[in-house]
Amino acid sequence: MSAFDLTVQCASTRGIVAAISTYLAEQGCNITDSAQFDDQETGNFFMRVCFRSETGATLDELDASFAATGAEFGMTYEFHDTAQRKKVVNHGVGALGHCLNDLLYRWRIGALPIDIVGVISNHMDYQKLVVNHDIPFHHVRVTRDTKPEAEARQMQIIEESGAELVVLARYMQVLSDEMCQKMSGRIINIHHSFLPSFKGANPYKQAYERGVKLIGATSHYVTADLDEGPIIEQDTVRVTHAQSPEDYVSLGRDTESQVLARAVHAHIHNRVFLNGSKTVVFPASPGSYASERMG
Image (tube, rainbow, N blue to C red):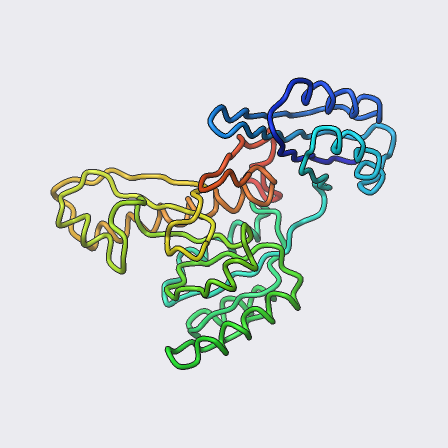
């Protein structure tokens, strides 16, 4: 049986859940997981439904026959075939490779069911690592004077690869407003700080100087406002007065890798909805964390 999910966003009103479940039942579909959120402040309604077709319905057939229901409630909706992997480009990998290494490992064992169609970096440090995974590596040097040309080349690579998601693995350059708007909701970044505290180039040093007891990481969608995009995932790790600034960095890197991976996992499973300057992130469906190579 084919497995799908349906994501819905619209104004909150009576009868939405009933209409969706009735439609799926009439199409011979069995719901396997469902989550919904009614935002009382904005009046927005969000829903994600996972289901299996017991009659062999195709993605196009489901999409076409749902049009009347979608129009009735003014829905923005999309059906997804869960067997189709999203194409991802790791863009702007910097001199630090912990996030890239972690994503490649999770991809290799099937914990992140994606197709990595390219890696773009302004450094050559990880070319061999990427090529050894049979992934195209693109070296695009970025300087203050060549930034517009470099970004145009980066966008060309992204578009030609067919990438649906761009993951910034500790990229330390600011993207242009034009690129952020063009790729809105499709670029995920990891910030080495528990936003909104301790922004800037050396947040761990700031945290150390303030004697904090928690450090963390934040993964968010990229917008034209630096490090102000809608937050997808965050986590923290405890530290004490006995730790050094170098300890903070080491502990922080582990947290960054985990937070970025969880954000990517949520996005590729269509669990993240933009809600103004915030996000709605639904829980993972049963079985979605299982990898092809367990053990």
